[in-house]
Amino acid sequence: MAHTEQQIFQKYELAKMQYANFGVDVERALLKLGMLEISLHCWQGDDVAGFEDRDFGLSGGIAATGNYPGKARSVDELRRDLDLVYRLLPGKHRLNLHAIYLESDKKIPRDEILPEHFRGWVDWAKENQHGLDFNPTCFSHPKADSGFTLSSPDQGIRQFWVDHCIACRKIGESFGRELGKPAITNIWIPDGYKDTPFDRVSPRKRLVDSLDRVLAENIDKRYNLDAVEPKLFGIGSESYVTGSMEFYLGYAITRGILLTLDSGHFHPTKSVSDKISSLFLYLDALLLHVSRGVRWDSDHVVTYDDALQSIAQEVVRQEAFDRTYIGFDYFDASINRVAAWTIGARNTLKAFLAALLEPKSMLAQAEKEGDFTKRLALMENQKWMPLSDIWDYYCLKNDVPYGMDYLKVVKEYERGVLFKRQQ
Image (cartoon, rainbow, N blue to C red; front, side, top):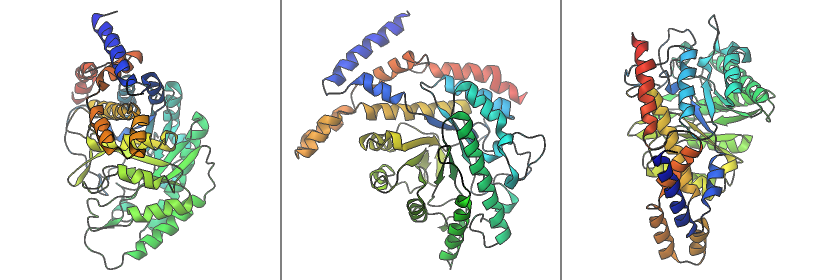
């Protein structure tokens, strides 16, 4: 055993005793963390290009900035990159696919995609024990060029996207049936107006009708769970978004489906974590797309910031671990894409570890007794507890790099694989 590993074990034992002084069972927390499956987003690896064999560029408010070398150019390259990321993360995790990541020798219209077009992904997931999630791709397509899809005033365009979403739900169901874990099929659309509209309600009425027709298709909930995702605004929909928070909250509650909270889809002054306790009073489960909004852009790599920590704390404090699904939605082409995945995922796991190591009983008792001084002192003390010693041990125990060692692996892969893609 290397000396550094001996140090990690020693520091872990000391840290475990420190947490025990506050009534925290570290080993139990690590067992709980091991149950968390994060759904990595495939589109970080190729800048949301997909493999549809299309010549229509990114649209619908989607933009990936930067030209860092090493972008995945094929399904095989993308899966190879993902394989490395999973090896750098403790635990078993999932993959979130968009419809444009199909595999086919010919161009398949989006309203005609089938489970067979994702056979390679299922085989790969089985081999690596990953679950799969899915998303309709209602952007970057000529029939989304007007800025409207499921809420379009054009009946033919609406029907096209209804058929696409139905096809996606069937693919999600096939994933769940094959892999023994339900897939989440999440619907996000770019619909909205750049400038102030006169009629705000008609597009929303059309969206209700379209979504109801999508959900009318009988899909087995044992294998597929449906979710809808709101947004505050987007590029090209700065003044009005058909699928707002209020719209989708009402829709999710009345239809008994999941609501997706993307932490980059709200105003920077809004607290996404503060919504969680209220929403769980009315919804059976939530899907969280963890992202980081910076000014007007919602898709930055997740960092270990206050917003992320607060989200993890609320999920753990509400004992909603089994009712919360965690995925990502960011894409950065200005840095190493494999590192972007890895940094965001490791930060998220760290945030949930920190939340699981809170002195929950002491905090609850202090609040119950009205001792808000003690509550504040405990919360502040928690910020200085030896979390990194627990994290390094957890990584070592799971045979993944600890500390900054993961970056050495990424840089070696960059030199040996990613940079060669530019040659």
